[in-house]
Amino acid sequence: MALTLGFKPLPAAIALAVGLIFWFVIPIPEGLTPNAWHLLAIFIAMIVAIIGNAMPIGAVSIIAIAIVGITGVTAQTPSAAINDALSQFSNPLIWLIGISIMIARGLLKTGLGARIGYLFIAMWGKKTLGISYALTTSELILAPVMPSNTARGGGVIHPIMKSIANSFDSTPEKRTSHLIGRYLALTNYHTNPITSAMFITATSPNPLVVDLIAKATNTSVSLTWSTWALAMFLPGIVCLLLMPLVLYLMYPPEIKETPNAVEFAKTKLKDLGPMKLEEKIMLVSFSIMLILWAGVPAWLFGPAFAVNATTTAFIGLSILLLSGVLTWNDVLSEKAAWDTIIWFAALIMMATFLNRLGLVTWVSVHLQSGITHLGLGWLGASILLLLAYMYAHYFFASTTAHISAMLGAFLAAGIALGAPPMLFSLMMAAASSLMMSLTHYATGTSPVIFSSGYVTLPQWWKAGFVMSVVNLLVFILLGSLWWKILGLW
Image (cartoon, rainbow, N blue to C red; front, side, top):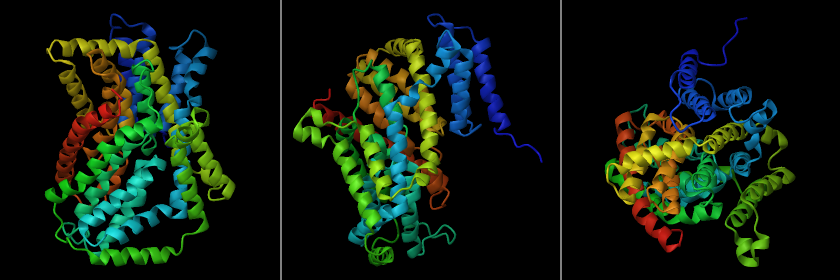
């Protein structure tokens, strides 16, 4: 029996070559220690392997942890080196997102996610635009407790969207996507980046963003779940209101009146039957987590009653386990959660020690120096950095790799050039999700919806660029004003 390699030879060879070149060939720049440069070599090789899909990201992360432990780039002794390599497995942010992914399994298992979608379509589905807003609202409701944006947009909302399009005989196979399917597929997708920007728990890389922001600002900016949600609420809602209208103007569906959609949704709800006990328990757990994440107990009874966001996630999962809505086998089989915990721990560990060894400061100083020569004030400089950061995503197929490679240094450079730390941090945090609108490979959700065939490649890229501009303008103009009113900067 032939042995199958656990990696793709070409991208793995490229990643290894890049790492070795940085380690042995490129001279260590002035101002950096050998350990900082060698850790950067490991980090860059890891990012190249992730981008090239040499191995699954979790497997790449295990190898990176082993290399950090073997090379001792962070510590003097082997024991200290492996302690450093494993240090972030106790990071609460990592467990927040991992546990939240486990909880999200309950939405799929109980059918509550689909029920929410069909309820809104039954209410607003008389027009195509109404269906679009129903899908958008459904995803918004699921976003706080469903950290896999792929599961949310591709696993829950997309099948509902396809069922509706098929009911109007609008399918790629019959070349009738223009009737209604293309428009609904685009709104299905472009809801995803916006809702991902609105909550820390709406997409897996957001806790990484929180961690990198804290490190880049020496913890002067520490974003809590409620601070993030409040800050992103108004610009996010406005983007969700505008997006279906913009896409309606760009790619108007031929079918604009859809009375059948209401009947279709009601039939689906009838098939689901009355709300089951497990759905009610899921809804109660969902509500308790939102109340605790929003800080309602602390607001009503004082700081002594505050509950940590990660503790809240554990409470929610405990309720589902005690009630039997989820079994321990369900938790063990949630591969995405365990995978996320592993690769997040590795990436945050690398980011932590790159910062601790002075690499992030060194890069930000050089970025600052280069932009200073352009003669821009802090506003122009921060917008330039924001645009460069966001549109660099054309070259990334992973938001995690992109955020890991660029966010810390770009944020530190902008702040050093005079940008208000909280303002620029929130803007970069929003861009870290909004950039997912750009391409058909931008995040896990995009290939799911693109591969269904409703939208051609030129249509996808055109819609992506237009929506990226609209979303970014809303966050820059309205967002900065909203954050000023909130007293955040």
